[in-house]
Amino acid sequence: MRKENYENYFWQNDLVRLRAMGEDDWEIHYYNRFDTPARRLLDYEVELPPTVEEAKHMTEAFQNFKAGTGRLMFTIETLEGKNVGAGNINSIDEKNGTFSIGMQIDRDHRGMGYGTAAMDIMFRYAFFERRLNKYYGSVLEGNIASATMLKKLGCKEEGRRRQMVYTDGKYHDEILLGLTKDDFAANLEKQRG
Image (cartoon, rainbow, N blue to C red):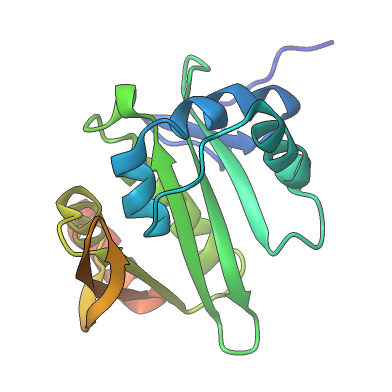
């Protein structure tokens, strides 16, 4: 079998490579389920204690881009092949050209640019290959890292749902963010110039 040649590969940039979630990725999902603060920011709740069975089931459900799941699930790796997190394109509405993205970078690899680099690849695919027009997402107030990353990629704050999410003993605002294909393309041009 020939070794992969990533020289002209769409699903990578200078920092990360995206690949299909595989059978062995259950362990990293299980590991990340013990990071309650990060999971609370991702899912806006405290999840029940993790189980190996749940981790394996989730990975099996989404591995190899199975049809009918409603999301394209990726494993995020360094260019050396180290698994650093997972991301997915979800809520795709072909009629209106909208989509969302979910992502978690492992606690041991945050703050290194992997999330921004992975989001950039997923945005390029959604906007320039799928012809989608609008990303929409939200962050829980206080999730400064995710809000900063999304704004760096060109997202704009589009609103705030006051006291929308109850977790950690109080109500939190949900901050709505969006990015159009034109805004993303303009941001790419700015970076080149």
